[in-house]
Image (cartoon, rainbow, N blue to C red; front, side, top):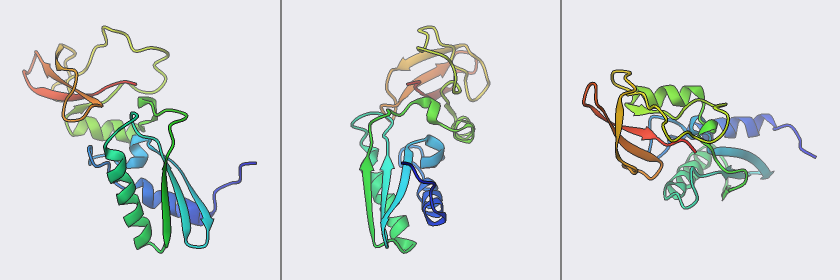
Length: 165
């Protein structure tokens, strides 16, 4: 039986969700969609569930440490952060605000939720600088494994693209 979150759980979820992603600091963990749950397990004890963007993501340790610090600062004596792999994270989990912030930071966001099925091979990636879809792949990996490096052939600016999963 699933119970509704308490007011304190909601407050703690808001605090944990406001933690910036260590690799994409322009978005919060809630906007990225990796924060899955916050549950009180006893007085001063809270359990947080995180789903990484991909298995083995090195940022999970930094996310956990940042969440623990924030929740300790707000009176939680014991904070446990668990990695939850099922259901897996998807780019559909990124909020509209998260997509907007990625684009504003010069990172082409993944297509919005509900794209309906596998990612097509000929996916048109829009340049976050000029809006052109005339872009080319420079590298399948960028500063993080979840991003690819592309260049716009219209304005010639390089940019990161958050890969669809």
